[in-house]
Length: 178
Image 1 (cartoon, rainbow, N blue to C red):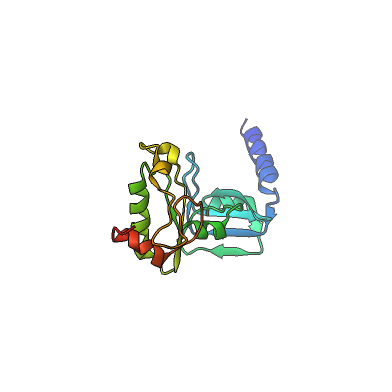
Image 2: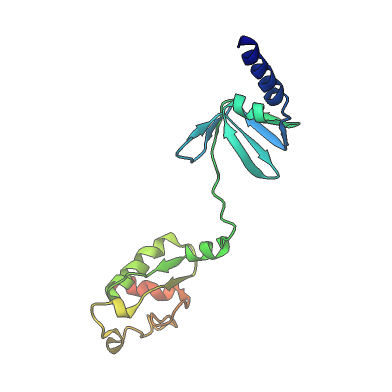
C-alpha cells in the first residue's frame, strides 16, 4: 500500500512539477495591488501579456504560473486600476466649463444672479451662458415683460442661445441699471 501511495505521489510530482510556465510580457511583484475584485480585493503581484492583465495573486502564485524576461519590483508601492475613457471630449468639456450653466433656473432673477456670480471668475471680455429653459420657470410670461431686450445699449440679449455677451455691456445689470 505504501508503495502505491509513493508511486502516485511521484507521478503527480513529475506531471505537475514539470509543467511549463506561461511566458508573459511583464510580471509586477512585491506590490500592494488593489484589484477592485470583491472576491480577492488585494494582491501582491500580477502578470501582463499583450497589454492585458492575465492574473493577480501572491508573488508565489504569479511566479509559479508565469515567467517573463521583464520582471518589475514595485517595492511595496500601491498599484490600482486606472480609469480610462477612450471616448472623452476634453476640448468640449473645457469650453463648457467657461460657460455659465443656467440649467435648473426657475426665474429671470435666478438667471441674472448666476450670470452675475460667474463674472468675477472670468478674465474674458465676454461670457457665454447656456441651458436655461423658460418652460421650467414659475412665471411663464418672460417674453411679454421684455426679458429678451438688449442690455445697456449693447448687442447682448438674454434670449439668444450661446451668444457671447461682452462684459462691459453686462455690468450695468449687476448695478441694477437697464
